[in-house]
Image (spheres, rainbow, N blue to C red):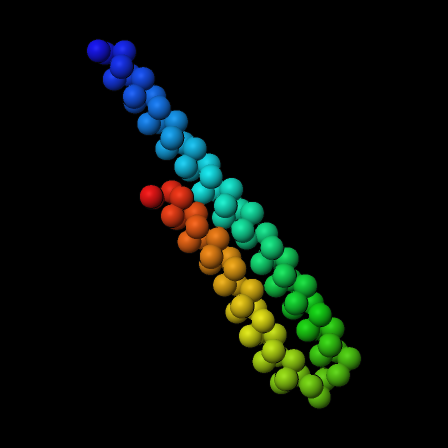
Length: 87
């Protein structure tokens, strides 16, 4: 009887550990894409503003909108990680 309890506890601990690992991987991998995307986007926007300073307002508005959409992908990854961890 005692061995069965220990085995159940071991399995429960393993499941919790795997859930934590899966959540960490989900948010880690899910943040790489948006991070690279925002970096490239800002770099190209600054390059464009440097070449055509008169278009700063248009470029900046478009850049901020694109950053918001890109950041949404990272938020989706965070939600998936939270679902994995707590469900």
